[in-house]
Image (cartoon, rainbow over all chains, first blue to last red; front, side):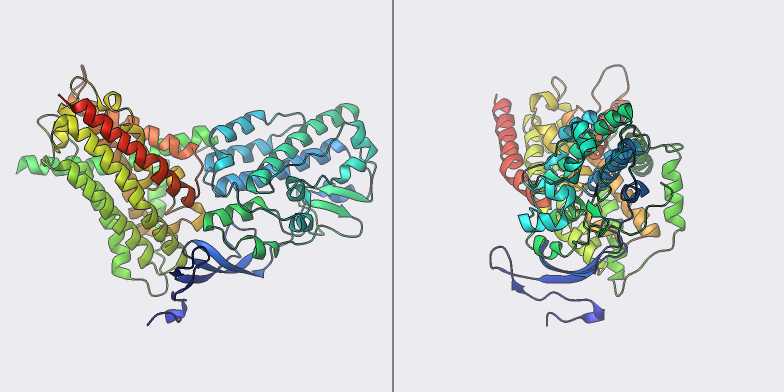
Length: 278
Length: 306
């Protein structure tokens, strides 16, 4: 006999495979909410065919992420752009370091984390970019997968939307940013590689903006909306959770590609509270 | 009798010292590349061993307990058998089989069995997925390894590892068959699932086959992996870098130096390169590496013609 749940564990039973119609054993299990590879609080029920995701049901969305306090302060009063952009660069690099760790580049991930602690306006990330290109990070697991549709990208917003070619960034409407020569960076492809590059590009841009803003002592002028590293935050609301996108995005992906895709997306809602101690 | 005991001691010593060397070199590579501030790379492996030793063993619901315990022992035994084949000098070879290359070739597929057993017997999804992954990829490493090793035995006209070393007296195989060593290194990372080819115990599977292991069972498994890497490097040093051959220093010193060289190369590569997706590697292995192994074999054959 096959199938059933002996000892409470699902036992394989054949079903049609996604790829070629061969009969394969589906394997169902739950992941999260305390697995460091996934966003904290995220859990899902997954069904695999071989190592390909056949179905994923989100059972718990990630905990809202607390942004550095400066982003919320920017909604109350003008804040120094140098400080805001430095916080943005740190946030993007932290995301990138997690993606590096997930794809087996533990050493590079630690290096990036250490860079964050000593990051200064005007720092160049060219060395890091060259290093990542040379070791083949942009061709590692999942690089060409996790392609977001335009609707999905718009729903997630922020760097993920810009990596999908949507040139929207509230900073372009702020005259102070225009004074600093700000231009929206956007990518093509909308896959994991595009999002990794977007993080790197935006972090580098943020550092150079921060350097110029510090020289000229420029503060933000728009207090209605602020472009956080997670998307647009206004007085009315913060970027909301977009985890359910994964239910459409992941089926058909091989496990490591799916994990790389999750690590390339920042889907949690923004918390009403700021990050402590920053 | 004394000789057998001495050989046994050398193999056991090599297992212990070699695995310690793997941990130290890997720690040093991590410290240099990841700029981590480990207090002391020489003591760190000992602390880690002690912590594994003292941590209580985890268990899952209804594992195949015997198989779960047996798998790390089997894997370590295969590594020890591999190490026993390494010739240290013309006069000292722990196990000098006339079919040494064939035995090493048999150990590689047998290791697949041990890895699958380790993943399957835990009765949990991530170990099982790691095990499946290894089985689906194992054949692509093993085939490449076979062709490359047949390549080195052609000029020796023998399957005996000491004869393969002796055949390199004029020219090492790393120069005579330039494709051989790079291909063999890729196989090494695959068989001991290290670095970019760590598909079975990878971070995206929460350490795959060993995700449910802890304590001494996990220590033994990590020990086995490190020992397999050492065995692989030592066989590689004998097959491609001329084993005991070299000026001034005695034979065993050359074997150690060359083994260390391959170990450092493998461990640094392991730290430097990101993990590919298994799917992509499978394509790469069959479409690129296997044809290259054929080319290596034809090259070796043509070169061996009188």
